[in-house]
Length: 314
Image (tube, rainbow, N blue to C red; front, side, top):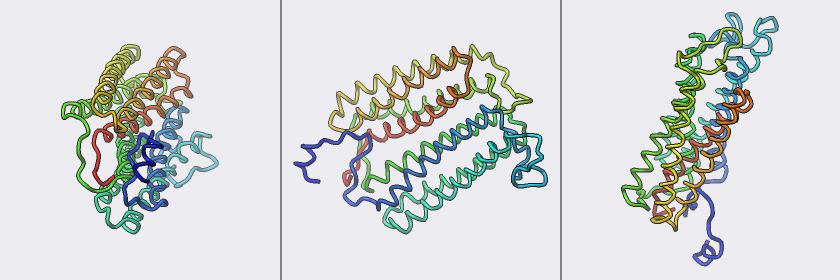
């Protein structure tokens, strides 16, 4: 694309401009598929919890003592299929991540910097399988369940980073904002972890324990922890608004303003869903949407933080 074309059709994307030497389209598709799968397993994992199917397969790594897969005569009825389906998706994630790693080695041998992060995503999936097993063997201990969710959020962030880096070149990254604004962005990213952690405490104190018969709960007052979580979200919104103002004043010619505006939009949507679920008694479908929104927030924050720097060969 020439300079004239760029002026005639300005890029309105959140993502960076494609590198002068873009990756093969099939490899780019694998980056996106990996991200979609990571978000998807968060949703299916939420479905397991919200339908009380967390112990649909009461053993691990087998579904029952005698069978790897669900059996007709299991007392867990339809719950066994939901839980086993989520376990099966872990295998799909592993295949996609492995295909991505092989694809980078074969299709983009010059992009050696992408190999280790992709390998770490693959290792993270294996870790998730182990933590999932511990979750089952401990009877859905809410602290382990929370850790299971937070690891998934790290994998979503890593996968979002890979999508972004797949569009860039390998020259050193340079800030497009002042160092103080970059540090604010890092602070917002860190505070996102706090918001997510508080969200897991809310879930661990509410009615959706993951087991239809023997709920395991944290010893916290659901109303109190819900309002603490809401207060943290309000502070988060204030920080994001401050960032939007800062990047519009200092980085108006980049995609940073659009990226941080996307964070604000997702956060506000999450806030609406959060209040709806709180005042309607936590219907499982609304809670599931909230979990999807959490994943999308992680993607948005990851991309917004990355938008504060640029590579010269992009």
